[in-house]
Image 1 (cartoon, rainbow, N blue to C red):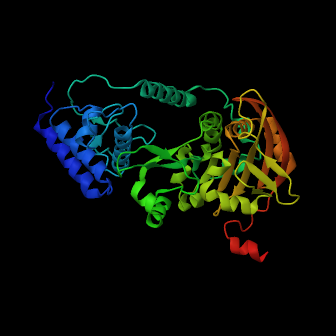
Image 2 (image 1 turned 135 degrees about the vertical axis):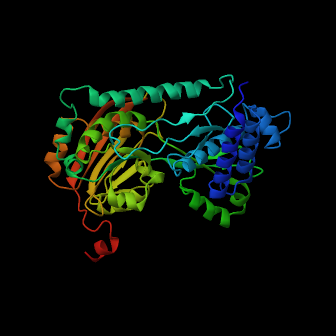
Image 3 (image 1 turned 90 degrees about the vertical axis):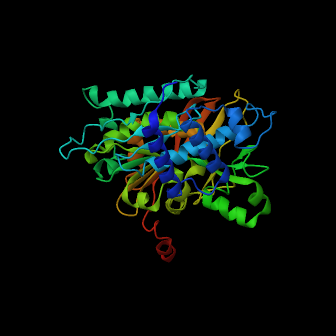
Length: 434
């Protein structure tokens, strides 16, 4: 095993001290114990096994089954997220503590040297230099190998995209009146995936037995409120800093990213991708937001959107009701799910001005098939032209019926496309006076 030397260990210890002093590890005793254990093991040049961590950090006995109990992997994931968040706050030249995927060892990455003032801003900065570390056996699971290949393929595609030359295939789409508010804007854009907060249920406050999705609990703060008022929640529910995205968001992003990039070319900044749980009021005010996801995942966009919309949510997010005539549009996905019977979903698209002249675009649906179809509609010049012809306004909404069979979209048909009154939606008291 190659020795990393005293300097490496001293820098790792110093980095660990900075992390502890920052408070970024939070108040979770199991998480702090895990960090201290991995630090001690890494300083000794030892890579512990999952069973060792379970027994020495979490007090598991020899009967612990890593296939049935994911508590170690859950806390490793939480710690990795904490480290990544802390590293984003460091100066470029500062050392970073990393917890590589598939490994139970802390490593140190040397920060970049301060750049000279004359660096071309279009050139990428140097990658952090990994300090020497002991040789070890690979521990990557098949999941992480597949995930890594997926990310590499997508990254390669985006690196090659500006080098392909020729006409931009997205140009005709961006010229549509539907995309023009973003194309004319000088605000940066965010593509926002509608994610869902999940938390852990634990019999002993640190061993997670199951993951819970509660539609009434959508953030760590809301979980804290529940824990203050509910004895069971106080004793069993844990924030794991986890959320999930519907599977349709991946294909939808593949369709939308080139168009959103072309639409935002005036700013010189590519659109960033984030999750709804990370969206702040400042982002809604200062950036263009392109939401992609279920109607149930709209988060802080839900109230202003449905103040303007001609629809309202029905008994659940699978149902929309026309406010004017009471007509109901109800997805039957939850009723018919045998994969052999055609199903009906609804894709919903809307565009409204933001609170400071920016643009909020909604590309959504009741379920996965509808979200994927909504994304395809937004990159189809003919369907965009149909929407523009029917709405003739700066703010609009459109509803499509989507017919599916299993995971295959069979067809879609436009039900309604209409302008909507967006004045005052960010100030509901003004709308009440109208």
